[in-house]
Image 1 (cartoon, rainbow, N blue to C red):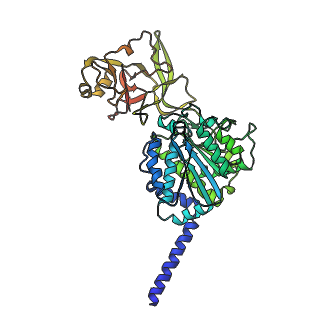
Image 2: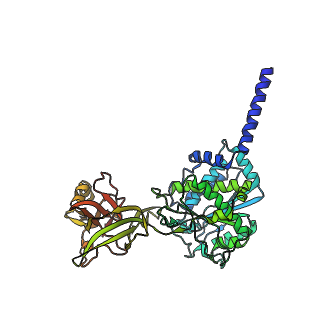
Image 3: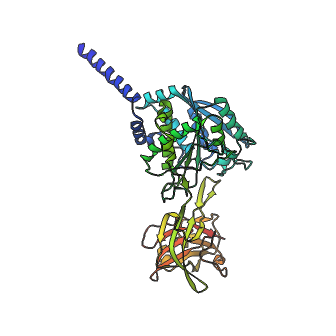
Length: 499
């Protein structure tokens, strides 16, 4: 009997120390373990950026089954889509998070549902979750602009930029955000956005994967207690993100925008942290950046619950470099060309552009030349040193084909080696505007290649290039993508179909 009592006592002591250890777990330990377990929280039903309002409804309905969450409808968008507020926690400190006020900026929305899964899951963090939710209350608007998300555009159905409607409040979505801010008067707010993937960390080639900002509340960029609190919290978030992405954090421009919500909410008394999700190599769907949003927001919740941000300084915030727009998708450096029988040497930069298909849920790339000349101050996600190489225009294969089956039988690499980048399809049997075959398809005609005086490198155009080294083809450029002839793998993500 004594042995049983002793065993029970030891189990009780061990469990007590476990709970104590969870409550006393350091922020660094918590985030490290959280990162390792992230896949167990990641919302499996959201795998791509271009989801819609209807895709989120089953997830929100599922949250209603839990007593942890309160779901309220704040109102409707211009086109009648509901805008819910998802809240959890009973703590005195209020935190408001809003995402997708720009319809095509969805990275943080994905992370928000990962956070809901974190709090829903029964696991080793239970004691910490209870501690968090006893200290803070989270109020979350996952998709403020569902009409914009429906067609994957920045603005709402009035074509108004919601982030420039904080004063006039002409959009119902803007009214919703203003009303909930005023009714809650939260101590902290997270303004969640996506920025261009072409921003860098200062004057470096490093992508600004995450950019933070404590928005200014006046033109003088004064720092009061409210803004200073946001600055200190950002310094802490930056320190934590550095553990996963060293040096890939920047500050967004702090110029005062009197019409913007972030700037005004800061003025109205809520400490606002802007998070802008930029680019990360080989992460077109921003799934790793989604995880970094999750890490940043969970760090913020931990910090606010425990007031860790007070340990940081405004000087640490000021030390974060501003972002600059110095990245291009592709740069061809020191490329030799010929015009009017004269040789000249230039750098050529392409920018990748997404074109929505299937109701804008999917997309393909239709790329173009963005800059020409001395591009020494710019950087590329991919760069090719073309010193000593000569560029010429890609050719159209002379044989015409009746159907796609014939084209798919071609040895594409052999075509490249002969300088061909396009083929002609005599009968139109396809409706798409792109192809993954690796060469452009011209429907019935090659007129695209017969424009007199066409310049090989021209701003805003999308020329195919054959780049030769010592007379032999070394690189093929199709739709702004590079194929190294020595590489067996097809690296032309998609070519185009011209009619």
